[in-house]
Amino acid sequence: MSTRTLIRGGLVLTAADEVHADVLIEDGRVAALAAHGSAAAEAWTADRTIDASGKYVIPGGVDAHTHMELPFGGTAASDTFETGTRAAAWGGTTTIVDFAVQSMGRALREGLDTWYDKADGKCAVDYAFHMILSDVNEGTLKEMDRLIGEGVTSFKLFMAYPGVFYSDDGQILRAMQRAAGNGGLIMMHAENGIAIDVLVEQALARGETDPRHHGEVRKVLLEAEATHRAIQLARVAGSPLYVVHVSAEEAVAELAAARDKGLPVFGETCPQYLFLSTDNLAEPDFQGAKYVCSTPLRPREHQAALWRGLRTDDLQVVSTDHCPFCFKGQKELGRDDFSKIPNGLPGVENRMDLLHQAVLDGHITRRRWIEIACAAPARMFGLYPQKGTIAPGSDADIVLYDPHAEQVISAETHHMNVDYSAYEGKRITGRVDTVLSRGELVIDRRTYTGRAGHGVFIPRSTCQYL
Image (cartoon, rainbow, N blue to C red):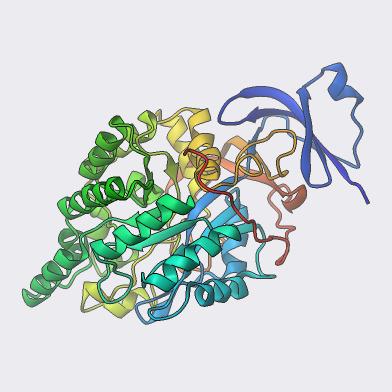
């Protein structure tokens, strides 16, 4: 049965345009746009008409960095693919790219299949996967080619977490050389984990066990050094590089210098680095544990450089690195030792709203909001124009956004499966009203109408910036 939905009377915002237009949806895709009130738009008929008067009509958000159900530090992220993608929808995100994990000594295929099983039939919105490489060897390098063939086209390596995910420079170089040949994109967690482990050991020996020391030992210079090293290794290999969760001014400077040379080097940051700081890590009574993530929160003065990087396109993407752990029973594992606090924050539901607030605060323009939250992540990871825009032929992943509604962010009202909010009590203006995923209503005027299993796996092409 063919179904037609008509969205009338809204301001359509994409990364390229702002236009008062009606949007016609047919069989889950955008069929046409026409100026509101034009003869073409007035002639359209539909099974369902949605009034978007006074609202923005924007592409569904693309969150290119989430960790649902990620095992970490003897526990696991508290959002499942079911709860996490439902929360994503509530926040106006209609596609996530999560990370499948290769276990040491095991095949990439085995890790990817585990993640397929976790997500299949559970997701409220569409999803794709990156692959974490924990063990670079001849076998896994060959497997990279096969994964690209099935639409898993990006591979994450870690310069941090020795003994868990860490790869040395030789392994990183080999993976980059492979990516240079097969079109894959290498994603890098850039922190000098070997040096950080020394500083952790020394801090604990001095009795410095509080959460704030997590930020102090993971030094800015060790993020900048690793970023620089990753860039140079990528240059040697002739491969592109995408640096995840950039948090420090000095790391942005390394990316900017590389991009000024015309190198295919890209960076993302996350809302926590734009809105939170070491002040949060220093909250008393162990409350700072809520804000432990890596890279860590930085002193507030780094925020200006991150916003500037987003304006100048030295940073292209804002993702969440959504990796929630409950305060009770999970973050508390590190009550006497900050190094045992599970690393990660909840945020998949807050990203679009926080970035809209950044528009109102004068940090970015409306179109840049859509660029960094929807279009650029879709292009970066081979999903555009299926995702990330509103154009004929695109998936009808569309959000009606009320730019005037006021809200207070709180764990009381969020939909993430975690017992605190990183932005508790923050007042913001702007709120998701209605969400369609491939033309199907997932949120209908602030009521959840979605279902587990609606979301499907989306194979990706290679990076579209290359």
